[in-house]
Length: 86
Figure 1: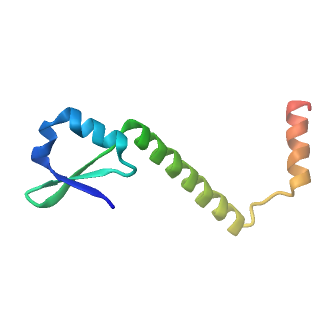
Figure 2 (figure 1 turned 135 degrees about the horizontal axis):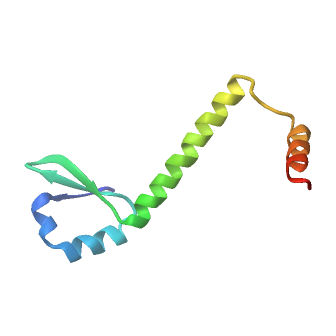
Figure 3 (figure 1 turned 180 degrees about the vertical axis):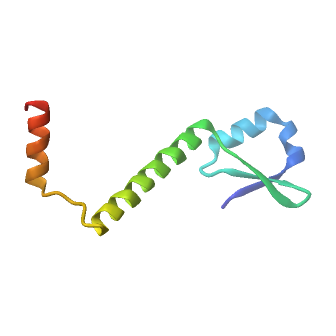
């Protein structure tokens, strides 16, 4: 379940930092009862960026398959071996 805290609670920086490191998802910050910001640890941020990159690569790969831009596995391995003299 997402954690939601009011912006005034950001005064407690060490508590917020600990909360971010313990959380398994971003923490939502509200201002005047409305969503305003999201905070998370650097580790979680990097994990989210990594997964976004993976998803983007999967979307690109699926688009290539849909367009018929695929190679035979044996042909691909042969070209790699030739390129790197393996």
